[in-house]
Structure formats: C-alpha cells, structure tokens
Image (cartoon, rainbow, N blue to C red):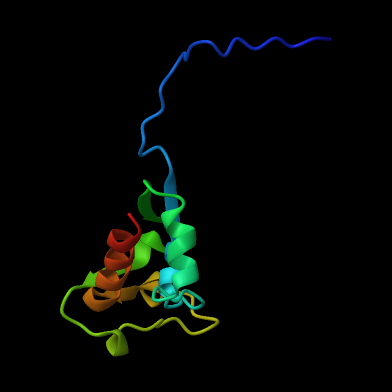
Length: 109
C-alpha cells in the first residue's frame, strides 16, 4: 500500500491558541506539590509551549473554592482519609496561589 500526501496547500489553519495545558484540580488541592514556579528550567519548558491556554479541570473541580483574600496558610486540603461526605471534599485556593500561577503564565507567554 502506498500513501500519498499533498502538502502544497493547507486544508485548515489551526488557531495559535489551540494548545491547552491543564492543571488537575487534584494538583491544586495538594498545593501543586512539585511545581516550583520560580524554576528557570520550568519557565524554559513552559515558554517553549507558548502560546497556550491554561485550564483547571478534573474530578475535584466541583469542590474547588476560590478565596481572593486568604493566604496559603489558610488554604489547605481539608479531607481526611475515610471521609464520606462531599462537604469534606471541599478545598480552597488562595488569591496568592492563583496570582503565582497567573504571574508564571504571564512570564512564559
């Protein structure tokens, strides 16, 4: 079998913002452990993906709350193992943490 590709013209142009990078809400819930937004290596890797949109999604999105005035010390995972109530799954991301994420995104494009 022979495949022939005609690459002389494009059938479709993809939007420059086609690439979307997703942060799992579970990662946010755990405080983004392992992400050092001040790391030059991470900045270089992320800049290579530019332009891209950032999305927060995942199973825990339904339980994510945003508190723009709290600090990170007050925004911790609140669910203990074995809890059964959905209210126990709620967690909060602070304005400070969100600002760190958006500042990083601005820096890397």
